[in-house]
Length: 113
Image (cartoon, rainbow, N blue to C red):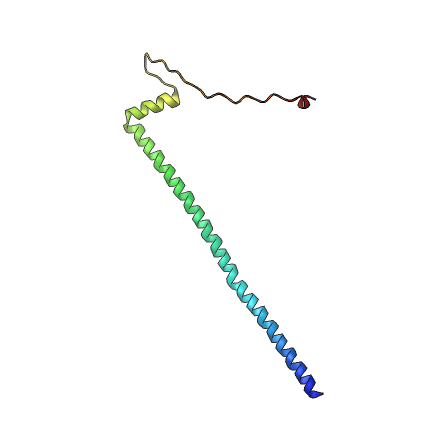
């Protein structure tokens, strides 16, 4: 009888250690995976911010170029004045073709009721 109890106790202790080992493995995986996931999210956010910085730098470069052209290029300045401000030289006749406006939909009969 002592032998069977000793076997039972040994198996029970072995299963307890196995369970503790499993729990430890799970905790270890979580301890590694959660910071890794946060790191990947941070890298994605950095990439997104870098893309926005690049877009803003491109916009700034275009605007600086336009300012320089407006200050130095008389032909460009005249073109902009004609297009954006509707200015014209003396004796010139300007014909502006506007794109057709979208027609407003007529209210249906069910909307009137």
